[in-house]
Length: 201
Ligand SMILES: [Zn+2]
Image 1 (cartoon, rainbow, N blue to C red):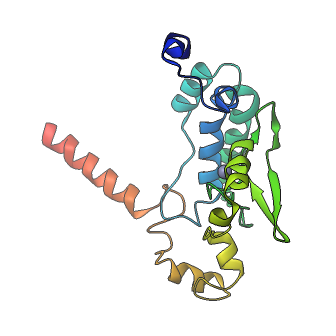
Image 2 (image 1 turned 90 degrees about the horizontal axis):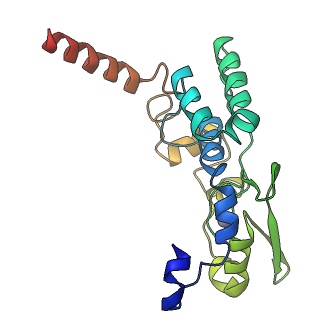
């Protein structure tokens, strides 16, 4: 596409090459982050079933089986033993895009990618070269980011205990968060499905 657009003076955006390399990784890393922090966000997650894992293996032949499928199989085994995995630490957040820094180096999917900058005696952390660049261009703007994890540790989110923080965020535990399996949403979906089957009969 950019070759076609070059005659209009359009160039690929900076770091397009990194984004291209990461395309076969980033969605798998996203879901793994959502999954392990499902207790700390107001939505459910689940382990893809065998049919969907097979689909992912087929769609991402160079990355899924090598880096991601073994993790899902391990987490599935843990869940089967009643030890559904939740990450009990809170993640470092990127100062610019504010997302958890759980993504890997563009050239090495086994190493977490992080960058840092110093500004007025404070150290700031970034998920990527692009986010560091944006910060370095306008640090006065981005030092103001209201980062939830940092705010929790500073006691600015309702208090010092987990129930205080969950209450501050109006998180109804088990209803809004945690695994989809066993949730009220799953029960509701199953009852709708049963109704649909009955209606079709
Ligand atoms: Zn970022």
